[in-house]
Structures are given as C-alpha cells and as structure tokens.
Image 1 (cartoon, one colour):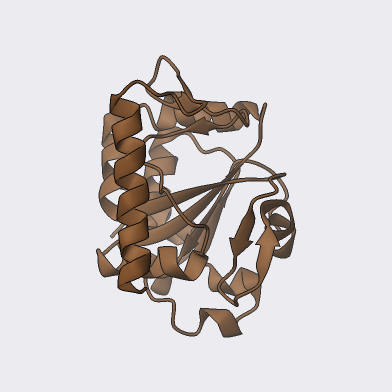
Image 2 (image 1 turned 180 degrees about the vertical axis):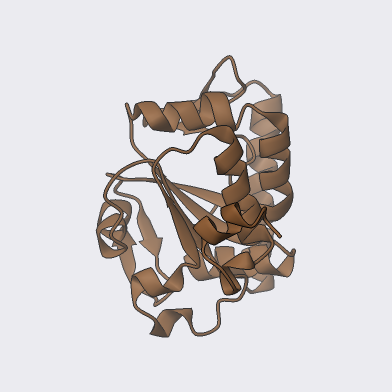
Length: 198
C-alpha cells in the first residue's frame, strides 16, 4: 500500500468522523442497539471497515496490525442479518473481541459496488458473491493474515474458514476465537468446539 493510499484512507476516515460529529447522517439511522441502518437497508456497525473495496489491500492492512480480515455478506430484509447485529454484536464481549482481532468488511449480497478481488479482478459485489459460492446471508468469510499466494488459489481455497448462516452468540464468538487463535491450521471448527478450544 502506498503512502498516497494510506493518506486517502486516513482522509476518508477522518472526514466521515468529522461529518458524523457535525450531525451529518450520511444516509444512516441509528438503531436502539447502536447499529446503523444504511440507505441500502443493511445494518452497519460503526466499527466496520471503511474500505476502497480492494481486498488485498484490506487484508494486508489488517495483517500489519495483527488482525484477521473477514468479509460479512448481508442482504436487505434478512432477519438473521438483523439478529446478528441486534443480538450478537450488541453483546460487548463479542463486539470488543471482534474489534480487537478483526477488520470486518460488509458487502451487499446483491450489491453493485465494484470490488477488486485478490486476483486483481474488478467485479460487482453480486458477482463476487457468486464467484465465492456465497448462497445466503449472513455469511462471513475469514481469510489468513498474509495475502501472499492468495491470488493463485481458487476463490474458496483463499478462505481459512467461513460462517455460513446465523450462529447463536456463544458459538458466534467461539468461531471468531477459533480464527483469531489460528486453530484452523490444526483442527476443524467442530474439533475446536469438542476439545474446549485448546
């Protein structure tokens, strides 16, 4: 990532923060649990990643700060997406752990924004979901901390694991702990659950 890109990222983040403090809503409405409801109908956490939608750049930035990179797919009107925000993310122990260990990029399952994939292909959110075999929402993809070699792998092989669908808060947190501890290198999530996360 060049200094110019970093400056652009800092400028965007600080500008959005200033507008927010000035009371400019930018099309978002806060819900009772602190999530925001965007114009596109997606719930949004204020700590979600502000991104230029360049996945390799986002993953590299996350890795440089010791975090994993995750992509959360959502859809307007999805009841389990709302549940994830209004129940799971509303628990401080969960949101604090995720914020400390992950950069989370939210993408729209039927969205038209252009995303640059790890292999350099510029593709709409909707087509990216198809490329990775994302079939329903919410789905969370988890990626390794290092971008090296990802472009040469098949799309599904780029992930270290994925959370397909809604999970209750305890298992939801455990999945993030599983990835943060890099236990995916030695065992499946099911094995991780059975062995007491050791």
